[in-house]
Length: 379
Image (tube, rainbow, N blue to C red):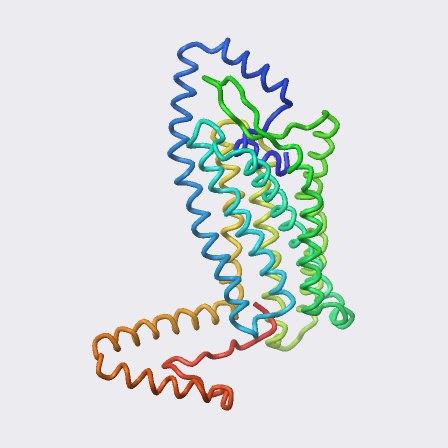
């Protein structure tokens, strides 16, 4: 269950070592040729379906989350408290996809774990770390929205960029420390499953250790975020609804932006809870449901950038600027190639203009000068 269940098939995790060996041996004795053929056919299909299926959220999520990080780093007006937490969430999503999806797809396609003992420990550890960091960040974002809406004046004392950076650092520190048991107790194990195969799985010193860490993982990565996010988001929605009913005139731009941020945070939380729910309520070993549960988890990491784009007006404006400048630079390069005699003189003039940028910051070169977003307080 929890992260252990989410990556159970990925890294060959399961029951205790003695129980697993007994099940494997008994299964091999009981199955005839029909059973072997059926299992072989299913594993062959999974070997082709899983890598293709998992590559979709990997490519989409890696591109989207990288764009989120770039936009906030590129545009100074996007460096707000809320966006700092969003960047941290994008980093956790990107790290989880890069650490988890390739090895998940390889485990479906390959009969054994071929990446060695070091990666066995490291990949499990990083998956646990990134997932815990994601859950903590979601809770922080929900509490931050609650403070900004319910206590707008009091929260100004601690809703600062420096505080957001410190909180993000503490989030990673806690995640790295609490995930250490995963790194210590994961190791390579060989089983006889239609031939000897190597699996990367936890080897807990006792049943109490296994049960205790499993309970901690479930509580820390789903139950606690579910409670915190549900309570805070409900209170925020209630406060905004009452404020809207009291307002007789048309809502001001600031109010509209505040509601937009709140919808974005609530949307991210809901997507997380929905995508991770199958991992906690179905039997992760039950055939195709296992692949579906993993696919939904990966989709969670890929969907967040779309939520930012659909709801965040400023983020859309910044993306338009990036696309516009990229297309303008491409057309400029093509013009230089088609008219080489003028390209050298134009580049010299641009070099002269570059010297005057500091003296006249509003005079930007290029056919498409950047335009600041309408509101610089939200994403």
